[in-house]
Length: 356
Image (cartoon, rainbow, N blue to C red):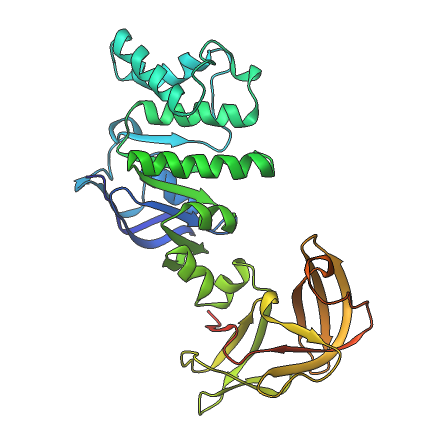
C-alpha cells in the first residue's frame, strides 16, 4: 500500500508562510493534482513529500511509514522535474539507469529494467541517443522512464508538461494518465493549468496563498466552486457581487437589480454569482419571461473558431462575458460592437459562491 498522508504540514521561511497546516490523504493508486497560481505553495508541498524541502511542522507518511525526517533517497519516490533534469553527457539508457546504479542494482537486472521502462514509454529504440538528439516530448518520456524504472511507491510530477507545445501537452497528459492507471501508481501532479488537472486527476486540490481552497473530483470542483477565487481561477470571468435575498429566492446585485435564483445553497453576507460565459444567451429583443435578464451593449467581439465571445457593458453596471456558438456551426449571426442586446440566463444557471 502506498497511501500518502499529510497531517498539519506547514512550511515557513522566516515570517513568510509557504504552506499553511495542510492535511491531505492520497489513496493508494490515486492521482491527485495540486493546482493553483504561482506562489500558492503547490510545488513546495510536492518537494516536502519528496524530501527536498524539510517541513517546518507536521507529519508525512507513505503506506503507514513516517517519512517526515527521511532524506529523498530513502523515500522510494520517483520524480519528474519541470526541466526534465537529464544528464546531457549520458545516453538515454544511462540516464534511465542512473537511479538503479545509486541503488546498487546488478548490471544485468538494471539493463532488463531499463529496456522495459523505455519500451513502456515507447522509446525502446532510443537507448543509445543523447538527450540533445531528442524532441521535448521524447525527453519528457525519458524523464518519466527514469522515474518509473526504480519501481517507486509514489510518482511525483512537477509541472511536467509546461515546456511542451499544445499538441505535445495533450498527447503527454493522456500518456501519463494511461501509465499511472496501468501501473496503479499513487501519483501527485503539480500544475497551474486547470485543463491538465481536470483531464488527468482523480481529485484536484486547489491551493491559494499556501492553503487548500477546495478539494474534490474535477467535475465537482469545476462545476461547484465554493469561493470567488476558485470560480475565477477555474475560468468563470463573470463574478457578480451582491447578497442573497432573505427568502433565498433572489440575488440582489450591488450594482443593479435583483435576479431570481433556483437550487442555490444559502449564503449569508456578501457573495458572488458566478456565471460561465456559456450559460449566457444574447438577443436583440427582451427574452421570454422566466429568465433573468440585463440590458446592455456589445463592447468587444472576439472570434475563437468554434465560438464567438462578447464583452458586454450592462445598463445595471456589471460587465459580462458571453460565449456563443459560431455562426458557421449553427450559432446566431455575429453581433457587432455597439449592438444593444439583452443578456439572459436561467435562474438555475451559475453558482453562488462565498467571497473567501
